[in-house]
Figure (cartoon, rainbow over the protein chains, first blue to last red):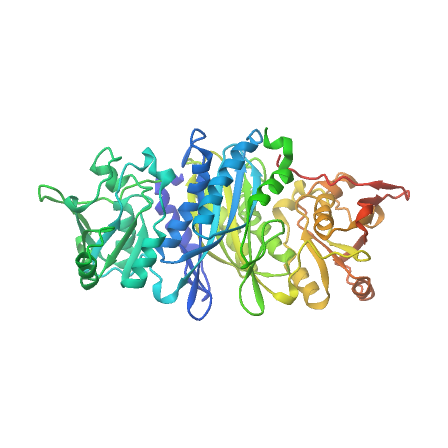
Length: 298
Length: 298
């Protein structure tokens, strides 16, 4: 049987079943970061993101932006857990006929984002390969009281997103700004019940929250902010690589956000009981079940 | 200019120059692990190793052993710093037509070594790619008093290795046992001045110690343990992927090892002043300068 038969998430579920972790792992695979015991008041966050030539970027893209994306994807994972990034390692594989200039520009992009977010590039590994492949392992820190996971959404919560969705392939996937500042603001001022970053697409990533929180959701086409770059509404639902935050708040906290006119955070729907699944109310007020499809490697 | 013109280590030196880290990084790139501030008595170790189909393994190899190697290489890095591994993340890229059985066996190998060394597989990332590529990011812990780096070797030290060298391509590169137990034994019972694991070959890895410690070395062909798998002595010097420990001890501590007949640790030469460079005394008592050549990706 081939992996594209069971799909990316089928494969992950299959692998997860075989893995056991000890008490020092607060949360293992299945969230944006692994959450590890650190000290009395804080957890350590640990995440990795691999990007591959021909899948996540092409050699026609500006190497600075490729390097930037390699680190930014992990920063976005740390942001989803409301933490702060601290250190990273960079594994880089590339063909022997790669130019030194390409590598220089790749690292220029990495260093720019490392500087912007106060991240130490503490080492790495270099290898040869047919395709340029970059894997970043990143460590972060989060105060225990601020940690946000995919689980924790409650029926009655209001669902919010940052920014605009869809069309990332037309540029944003290489230039997105990880929503670290926004995540920290939320964690410090509200009780965020669940949070994820939108990497596979709104429908897919919202489904992760629903499954891990054992709840359902109703979202409204009218409310979902669609990027000008998007070719249509379905890209806002399914394209992925928006790297925006998707999170849920109690109605009380949601009212605070709306009253304060914090327009960086847009309500798009509400959490309901699990039995409702994931539903979309379209502009003509028709209701339909949304499939959790989105970007899949297999 | 292409990267194979400046070579793997030229490229690493070039990248290192552009990277700055803050005080929470005790040791950044240029050692087996990054060494990070952790708590009063301990440092955190952070390392990554990427293995690529066609470079580090082929699809004819047993998938269990490929998975095993992916983790074992990082365990060996942690051992070089005299630490204990704790957690890892696995980034896995592979073609869409990979079989589920291949992935199952890959993880079976990873899980076996994770269990053997008490390592939590705390998560990972999955991607598609033309070639199977596995990157493991690993965290470990080391008591401050036990930390061993490549720097620290002193003129007069005796140089030791574990195991036997050469011929790893004939099987050992997939089956080696990371020398974690030996490294911990050494750290607890002796003052290890410098340590590295032999991944690129004895000549190359000893050169890393020499450069970072600003010293030279004389080693003796007679004393270097050559594996039965090696096609000749030069493989013991240059082949790499032995994943044995290479370390230096003061003469006093070296005498203790020899007196106690700890035959797991074999003396192969001595550290001398830097001006002597790296020299080999062959079986006919002739002296020659050893070039720090070994396995190079570029």
